[in-house]
Length: 514
Ligand code: GAP
Image 1: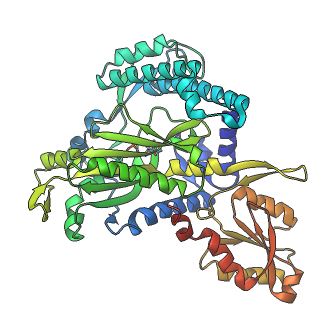
Image 2: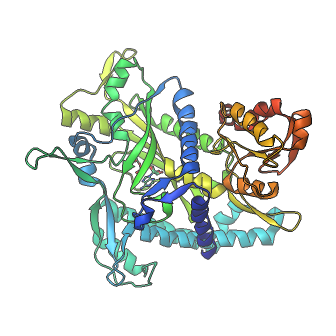
Image 3: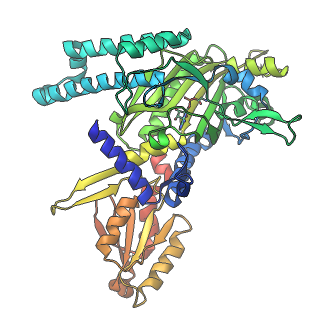
């Protein structure tokens, strides 16, 4: 656990030191769970968004994008159920005065039991060597089965109490498990209460005429209310999808874990409108497709797993998360929800407008069912960033810190370094920069420190290529290109740089792996 916390602290400080993420309004001591993306962070975030958009919108002829506004008519949120049901169960510790999500306290307790299972697996793998069969071990080992049974029984009781709004039982569960305040160890808890997560504000100037509106807590509703506009103007035939990326706001109770859980964050969502009765098949399709998208980035198959929901949201008939192994364990990265016709029917009822599709093949109108994929852009950023940050022991006995970002996502693709700031080398570096910048985000590093030090800085910043201009360049128009991951250096013609870089950073090559 302490090792995980250390690793996470390194991620946070590295993100600041290398210009990825700053605390919001830091000079005023920051604002809890709100962050700013710095010069490198904004590029990485943009590249993730583009990687998603390309795969989701531009590579699918039946999916289009929109950009709906953050403020929507307040009835939207009444219809969607957010005014009445977008709540988290909160509990306060009477001694520390700290506030927690009651369900998260219980889930964290279970995660600790899960860590014990992982420990047993590692021990057994060491003992049995190559003959170790993990599946069989998990299915037969008495201690592991006992742990798993305990987890299942706790989680199913939690799910049942939350579903029945039995908050007294949630508190009873916390007390029975003797869960303590993670910061102080105190077990002196208040009752559990529900807390609505939407940020409200007033639209209009005068107190009499102003209207209570909300900052949207999800981008999905902007898609639902535009369903018919897009379907008609785009002449879309079912099945078809509408995608968008944009800000969402939630007044999160547990505002920790850096950009994992923020109060202002960005979502990348797609609603896929389908014929009622086909939801099982599309649910399976989108679960597989989204996992393939993640795997195409090469961040390790073992770092992902599905978590099928026991407790379903008020709008879903099936739901699963794609979980990622963050520095603090496996947690939700993306949700895939079969949302039925709940949202469109609700909007029909509250707006009095028909939101139906006329199916020419069936010769009838119906309210489509919806399959949703929803991923947090900031959470994806954290997955990519934390997984990429590595410390490597080198053959010469030294070590290096390297940010092995998938090259397609790296903020800067190449850094050009004149060996010295004289003899015409900076001018050649400028010329290369001016050519490459048309296609790749490129920078020049002409700081007067050694090339070795400059390489290390670029390794830590995540730049896949360094290009060194030296005195031989003056003679033969060649440069040294160094690869971040292998540290291999090659002498190449300046004219070949574009193709060499393109081969590694081109989105097409990466997405073809899907
Ligand atoms: N439209 C469905 C929806 O919003 P959700 O599970 O509440 O479902 C979807 O959110 C995704 O948005 C999550 O999987 C997560 O990646 C991201 N997300 C949710 N709350 C977040 C927060 N407070 N901070 C950062 N990302 C968040």
